[in-house]
Amino acid sequence: MSRHAPHTPHDNGPDPQLRAALDALPEERTPPADSWSHLQRTIATMPPAGAPQVRTRRTRVRWAAQAALAASLVVTLSVLANRSIRQASPDPLADLSDDERRDPRVLALVAQTRNWHAAAHDSARSARWPMAARAAVDGAIESTNRELGSARAALARDPSDVSAREAIDTLRERQRALLQHAMALLDDI
Amino acid sequence: MARAQRGDDVAFGVLYQRHAARIFALLSRLAGDDALAAELLQDTFVQGWRALPHWRGESALATWLHRIAVNAHLGALRAQRRRDAHESCEVELEKLAGIAAPSSEPGVRLDIERAIAALPPRMRTAFVLRDVEGFSYDEIAQATDTAAGTVRAQVSRARLLLSREIER
Image (cartoon, rainbow over all chains, first blue to last red; front, side, top):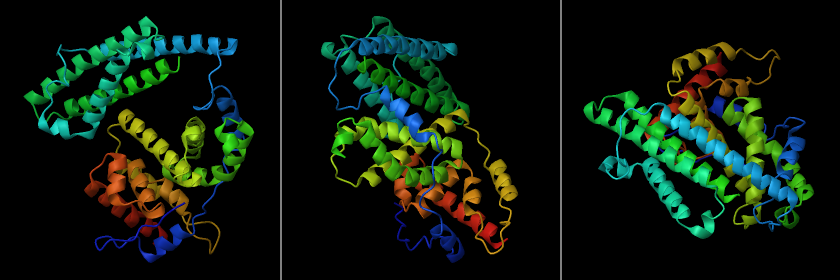
């Protein structure tokens, strides 16, 4: 599967000895013996994406378990996000700097937030979402936004504040992951 | 293939048997850790199982699975990066110096796998994607959310370290 790259004029590639060692690397390695059985057990609990949905007793049990999981996940994340609230700020997405507007990570979060709002307002899609789960996600967004606002304010005061910059990146990634995970779970209900 | 796409786990098992060893080799190299590679192998095939009904055969199945595996590794790397934002490159380099002892079997090639595994995670990823998997610097930069110049520096540093170990 490897596709050794043609070397550019600025990149002569590894030296011949290293290249030879790399070329001698085996293309295959045997996975752990229980790998397939473990995988088999995992996929047995989930239908492939294209399979028709039949609501059986097992499906209903799964539905209940997933609803509980979704609720507990978002409540947990909400609590985590609330833990270090320092200062309130309205919506950090509304006042992005030009640099932030060019940052793919920020744009990914903006897109994910828009997806969330669109899905939450789509009654056909969100009709089965538990209210508690939805409220918890909204609460987590709000809390993370406040925390983001605080970190952004700290960075505005001191542009060399590395910890504030890292906090912003972490919070944005956490919020994007929360929305993505929550939507996947809720849509699966 | 059609049976696997319809959700036949026996047919999926055949696909697994055909591709797992190659994907595991890739993941072991990228992750530098067999236990983590085994987890990522599971993630790769779980994602493959989910997405298989939508696979339209534009690329070979092996290529498609390969891409899922690389993405699974990059996701794990990002998660690790968040957990350990202050990873010390120097500490990892010291580890490298300690592990790359010459092979005990005379005339046998240097245990290059071990030396690659000892590289710091981001440097290892850049190196494996570039020099083993043949990605371009821009592709790696985009996939790892890192500046292309940084990727070049990581690859160059990794080559230097590994070449030194070969010469020892």
